[in-house]
Length: 232
Image 1 (cartoon, rainbow, N blue to C red):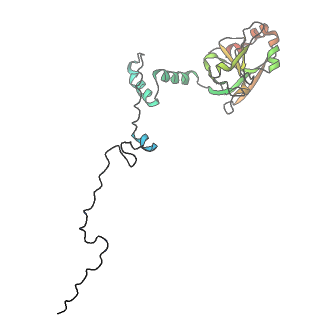
Image 2 (image 1 turned 60 degrees about the vertical axis):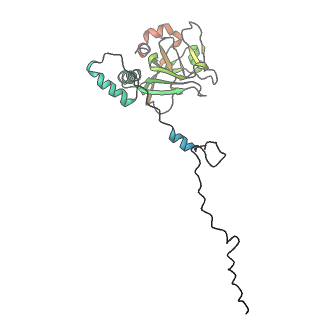
Image 3 (image 1 turned 90 degrees about the vertical axis):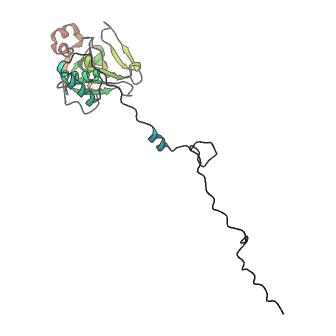
């Protein structure tokens, strides 16, 4: 008899007779290693780096050595609320008390190298002197005690001109030549401030009084306003 042909298995693809492989498990890289070269630490983004930095603790509050008595608790609370040192809190309170009715003016030279601040009234009393130098440079100025004046920057950029008695210190900027303030002859503990060198917005009014600087000794005896402006 003739044998029937054996059925061939259908083509199930290459390697179909092989047993199936078990699924491969991917091992996680150890901490500190990323997708790059082995052993190299992964660089965090800038935001992550900032987030991981702990905030700096606030500095210790400076204790005041003054005998404040029953007001010590109020003083400490005031320091904490305003984030001030003992010296800063004292300055703030003294300025508030002593400078009542005054405003803080700011100003400087033309190029900006010299900057200052001064506490004075919003209504300025300006002197127009006709001495030889004030006449040439149009030195109109108002006078304040030295304690109310503060040079913010530019001390190294200031030069001084003196003549005659050398008591008046005519200071001006080395770069632009502008005199925004000077030390008057009438008092070494005061400053004469040029109102035209102040920043806008703090002056309410200006009253100008003439001063006879050509006869300085006689005029200073008769002029009481200058002497009073030089005092605290």
